[in-house]
Length: 422
Image 1 (tube, helix red, strand yellow):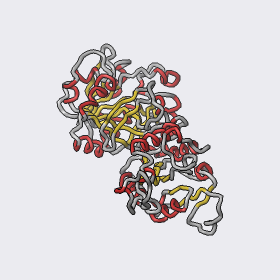
Image 2: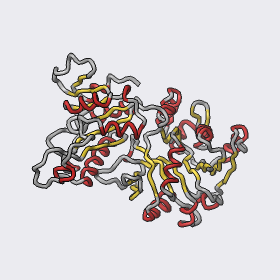
Image 3: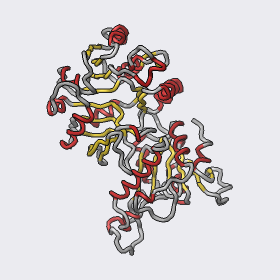
Image 4: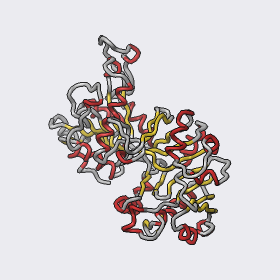
């Protein structure tokens, strides 16, 4: 597979730190961002690169030349005038699926998993997506449970409740997609190609919590350099065992005033966003595991529950925090409710205190339970953590477990977060 890298960026927001050099040549750990990208992709099996250049392109060509110094092959397509994020693709003569990525990203992810995901679905385009700390100014992806993209939401058109699923700027593209939308001139990949192609049902979201950061501002540049030096970037690769903080929802994340059946009822507990931000920064996956008997009782549809969770993600994102995944149990063993859904009124392995939700997350994310925590405000949460092999964290002022050293007791999620080490 070839990699095509968009390396023509002006780097306007980085002028204070990299004046008079192309954005992809910005140094991180004494090495251009573009070199970090090529080295990672070479490690992942890609050795054939096309760099799309524009602004100060000679600096890029003089540095990388034909790529032989890095044991790769590099060719160039220089834009005489800006062609947008996709215009140049129609001039490259590509006849096989290729990886396309922005030249201002630092990343480390399991590329082979993404390629397999793409091939299994015969996708026209597979977008690498992830939650981030600034969804309010990112392009958001709306996708079904199987990853099929159903909508693309631009930066300035955010609804009341949205999932923090951001387009990371890395995608695998089939030439079949370019044939469908063959055009000329300046072309925006998202607006002019991806969004219209959603109706084909062959655009997919590959969601991952692995490391992808746009280093396009001085603050993010500093963060990315620190993350590389500390080993954080490499540790987030899903081939490594991950540590996680599992969170109950009601009474742990949101104010608990009975069952929530509408997005407008979702209100975060004070300090929760700050706590989750701490988990994010320390490299813990943040995974919500929640019993939602409102589904079995017929008080709330799955579609409404999704919007409730979207509202939770919106509120967290507005405060620079995110969750990596949400798992819920829709069952309820007790019958007798007016609108109940009989097929969901069953005993199950996913309703806490059973550990089913945690076990599914472990399988999905390669989680090491011995380095993970289950946090909640009920005895069910404590027992679910014990049953899974995590360290239980009980949010309570109770002294009920004060003599059980295997259980940590805190008054709030923020109190617990402040005790965690990297």
